[in-house]
Amino acid sequence: MEMPEKKGPVLERFQGCMLGLAVGDALGMPLEGMRASEIRKRFGRVRDFLDAPWRMLAAGQWTDDTKMALCQARSIAARGIFDPEDTAREFLAWYESRDWRGIGGATYESMRRLQEGALASESGMRGEMAAGNGAAMRIAPLGLLDCLDLERLRADVEASARITHDNNEAVAGSLAVAYAVARAARGDLEPSTLIADAISFIGPSKVAERLEMGQRFLDQDMDAGEALARLGTGGYVVETVASALYSFLRTPRDFEETLTLAVGGGLDADTTGAIAGAISGAYNGLYYIPERWREGVEAAGEILELAERVFALVKAR
Ligand SMILES: [Mg+2]
Image (cartoon, rainbow, N blue to C red):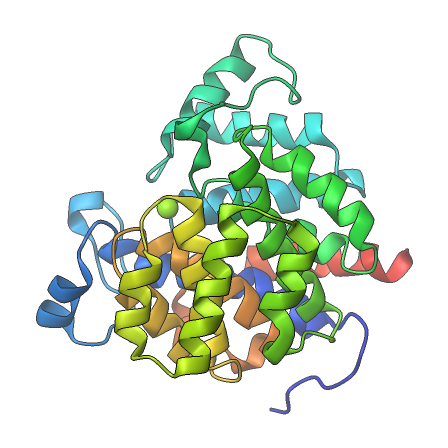
């Protein structure tokens, strides 16, 4: 299968983004919380979905990252635009289902606020606790929807992130991810300048500083495991976003290599995998995701259909 070279939005890139996100989440799911050294010792390089009986999840199942990204995509498909209140209702319906699969602290608290009647513009958590990756992990559908209008992307991403994470670093991290997805989805992402371009889009922030560090590690051709250890792979958005973009840029044309590297960093492995998978999937297109992952990931049909509905909206704009 040829990589879609055409400029402008292409369905395969939209589907690659959404399915890539789910695949990265599912690949990292059983590794969440483990150290990179432990993963290496127990599994070597993880190239297959694994069962996680302690989470009551089977091989190929994904976590809150994909749950929330699908909420975002479902709202976009239903409303035809980004609608913060409708997005918040989708998030809340998921929360009330109690199928949480590793819900983060800031998201949990903001869902309680929504339940008590808060508006989407006031439900987000503030302070240190809100600098987690819980907004960046689910933001990819907005990168698809707004790929042709980066100023609209900026406004939509900020409003969506703040539903749960009313924190400037969480917003900066979400913007960086959505920006990369948008450039990939419309076919003009240039790997050699992605980090510089993303930094000028998001502005001065700790996220920008960590991304710059990632670019230096790429330029130095540092050992990839060492680079991820230094960038960090925890739940702090500054770490996750830098490690995910680094994993993509280390091997931009190799989805499988990007994902095995990203989840091998451990700790918040599902989220690093989800973000790296969304970007690499959008850049390479659906058919560059290995078949065993495309077929083994939970709810692939539903995910591809949602991606197609978002694509139809963009084509109609
Ligand atoms: Mg998760």
